[in-house]
Amino acid sequence: MLQTIRDRATGWIAYIIVGLLIIPFALWGVNQYFGEPQSLEVATVGDTTISLQEFQQAYQQHRLRLQNLLGENFDPALFDETRLKQEVLQQLVDEAVLAQAARNEGLRVGDGQLHEVIRAYEAFQQDGAFNPELYQRVLRSQGYSPLGFEESLRSSLVSDQLREGLVASSFVTLDEMNRLIGLLTQKRELSYVVLSLDDYLNQTSVDEAAVEAYFEEHKDRFRSPEQVRLQYLELKVEQLAEHVPVSEDELQAAYQEQIARYGQQEERRASHILVTVPKAADKAELDKARTQAKEIYDAIASGAKTFEQALQEAQTAEAGAIEGGELGVISKGMLDPAFENSLFALEAVGDISEPVQTPFGVHIIRLDEIIPAQVKSLAEVRDEVAQELRQRQAESRFYDAVETLANLSYEHPDTLEPAAKALGLEIAESPWFTRQSSEGIAAYPQVVAAAFSEDVLRRGLNSEPLEVEPGHVVVLRVEGHQEAAPLPLEEARDDIIDQLRNDQARAMLQKEAETLQARASQGESLEALAEEFGGELKQTGLVDRNDATIAGPVLVEAFQLPEPDQNQPSVGSAVLDNGDRAVIVVSRVLPGTAQDLEEAERIALEQRLAGQIGVTQFEAFLNSLRQQVEVVTYLGRL
Image (cartoon, rainbow, N blue to C red; front, side):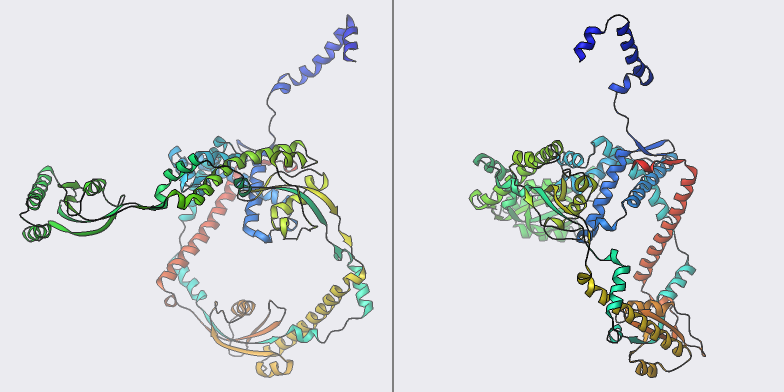
């Protein structure tokens, strides 16, 4: 067809075709076809924009933090995804507002401070030290470039300066502290009657008509849950390590590199005579100390005095200026380098060093014992060295394998076969599981979230690689799907009966508790009421807010009740965690005083209260900043 057009596109026909082609170029510009695609914005905050990519990175990190925080309890179905996205966007907007305010206040973070913070991150460290290659890999795995990450971190640190400055500057007055301490250390005398839910459950009955009526009214509640079955690939560092070959030369090199780990270096016992000098000693004082030390050394070296005699006589003659004695076992790296160099240069036990100067003064050192180095041979630690080598090389290969896995699972979105074949992995299959499952591969919240996501479940695509644990990545696809379906009455019957009996029992219990509470408020004996209503009477005496022997709901209600007067008891009720009800009578209130707290407790309380006030003040400050900055959000792009 194209060749036919070309053959016939002559004369006025050619001009028409060219004219039609010119129109889109004239309207939109050639640059629109060849330039970089413009990134979508999800918000503008004053003179700052928040891109869709920034939002997506922040959203994924927020979900990952939730998963790590909740662990096995993380259930994606319990979260409103739309609300979660809006919360993340609001956080990004607030950070942008703070960053602009910080810039206006002249707050800055220098390159040195930024690099110190980065080097201190454990995620970027290997064997306790910052590793540039690991830094690059971690950033790539999170979708960051070094420049983008550093600018984001710099902005965050600047905002933190502003936030911490406001929070840390808050304080609490003495009157506020005394009032708070009085409330926190207050004690109350109380009694209460517990009515058991089980006693009322035994009085309930449910007929078939009620069961059927409840089922018809609540059919939506009785459904089998939605389920999926997966195919998935697992990539683990440990798996790769098993197949990494290690040569003898590599073992030898690694052993020599880490030899200090496989034994104890040479150590020495020593004694010394020290001619001390002041910290700010001048040349004359240093010369005097060196002369004294040289005289003592000459006396010992010539045999005129033993080391002990020289030390004793020098201490007697120069009281306070001469120190000495045994130093115990010394290994390299413990003391001043000049001292250690002289000590480890001595060849035989009993040898003494010539005077050596350190920041403490001038020393004469005697070697008392040599403790030889004890190092395990390569044969003894071969397995350990080999395993570490394999692990190190496997970690390096792991990131390449993850990249291959990501590429192939994306290029072939409807199958895992190419990725499995390229990486030598077996495609595993899961049993059926629901959004609430927590066994097998479904024990990882990231897997459950991905399995029920729109792309994987509805569109049938492979998931992106999911890092479920450090060094453990999973890619999955849905092999089978069962929608939630209504349950028949027979399968729901037991649950319905339990629910109806429970509702009846709670209603009866509430009515009885209200009657008991009303009569106790009129001054009737709680002991007599407990016997009449079949409840358990508990008399606690004076208790504080933190009494661990009393149920939490009882304590909360007891300390919220008004103080009793002489003619009217203070009565309330509380529902316990197991469904029982308690009717509570407070008969006396003993005010607390500042003396009821230890000084350390008072300081901790003051700091906590000041922090809470600081957070409140910061929120007010942030709200005022929000009103001063024009913010536009595009929720439809989230």
